[in-house]
Image 1 (cartoon, one colour):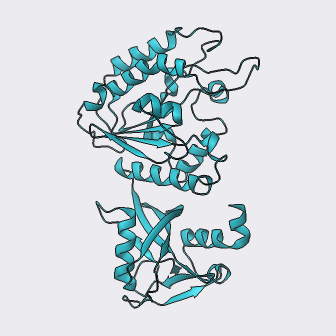
Image 2: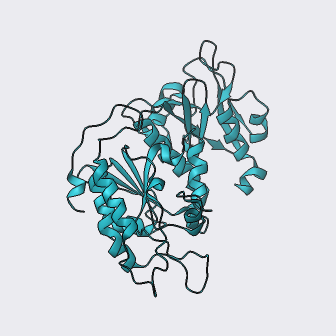
Image 3: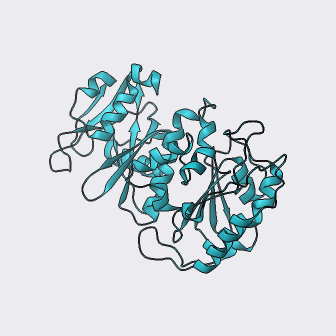
Length: 351
């Protein structure tokens, strides 16, 4: 991995803050990137079209987002991640009231646009030789910035950072810890819809990651978990009792995550405390932001199984087993209403 993964730093105390990287060093490196003409124009890079240094996003940050290579739409916009695939990332992070540049330093494993031969405005996958030539630039960026978490989007980016075999979509969401730093591997959004096994939960996985990092950066993100428990086509919902926030509304049972607690551990604890059950927490179904004036709740809905156990209200709340149509007729918070709508057969078929 190189010595950049072994560097230590002092954290800035503002949201999104980071060590004060050498601005001169990064500016000098980006000038070298702009001037580079190492790859032959045929059959690889043609035109050496790159992002301007101003497209790199946030310099003083704890997180880096590494793509595979510039796309032509983004190159022409002079802004990264503004093509069809990149807008998927932007759409999800905007649900938190943020944009990519608010949280990440943006860069790519291959610095020039890899144009498809014979087509004037078409992208192609970067070649291994191109990634190999650009890798010193990428590692130098990480050496200067020393990010706490690096999000690698696509196999080319992941292999350039990890120098190990990566298989997608199997490795989507996998985290590697090297010298105390995290590298999170994501399937490229342009490829996600091709994988039916991954696609239903793909957007949820993006938003869950962005919410986690935004919280770590100091933004007012409150992670909440909720259980989607189904028996015979009916789902378990509970009524918030008087005296609690949002009393009188129905919800999928769960609660706020405690510091240092995993999302799955939080949900198991909440279900044990509220309903006296030992639940098995399954797949992440949806992640839904719930904004208010002071903070942004981000609700993580997990498919959960209670086995043969019968839930018993321990906090004076009512509970019911209802169909999605019946749930939607109740007074619900916005996140629970969105989850209930997704469970409706007509909506689920489109999701």
